[in-house]
Image (cartoon, one colour):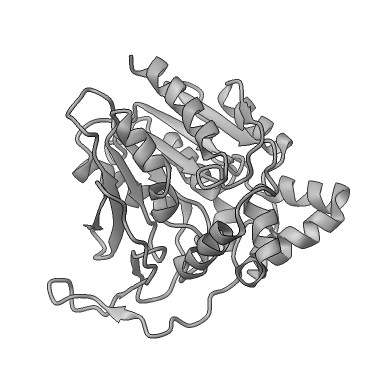
Length: 332
């Protein structure tokens, strides 16, 4: 398990956040505690709506929803983002795509991300808090067992959710789960060491890009970290701006994350799982993809010609179509 010192050079966790600036107070209908809401303006597309799910603790989670065009029997899809992203990253392409295919879609912004509330005490979330928040949303607002889809560190949160399914009334059952360019069950320490030992130049770049947040002010570094070389620079700049505004607190507290890993194994797992990686992923390498697939005893799918942000990349359809094929076999 990685130590706290090693984690500070991790290419996957943001550095301590600056003090929130000019944050908005919550409306009068909420508790009197002065929770703040992260500002991350994203213009919704036709058919999409934004609402807020109230957690038992009083925080609101942003939800971007897009229903299927007509009622059907297909399971809902619940999307969970990773660091520096929010619900908007799914709303751009994948929500419209899967909605048209008949799947009701919900994309969440985790606490202190996107338009979700910022805790008053300014404490980053943990695997347990994020997992509990998702469980609360599914239990109260999703009408049938969903397919949970997680990207990057969102994939690690989905893995934690799966590990809590057995014998827990607090975690509603799933129809399935998809892990997209996910951090492996052991966390990112193995990824960090492999980069440091075999790709030192890449290790410096990815650490500067993410741990030092240099991606936010460098078009070339943002593009190399998240997207394919052929990605339009104008789109990269647009997504870069959204990323800069998406995270008011780190997604995780480093020490608490380390103490919670590895994700508990699930010997009698009955959840159908699709493990996907990207051939041009600058963050999660092929060994990380293999570790995740071995953990769940499934064959991984590596999508050729796409980068880490598979759902936003120039060839975003490739990953979406693979997931759709898997979903149609899962729920005929």
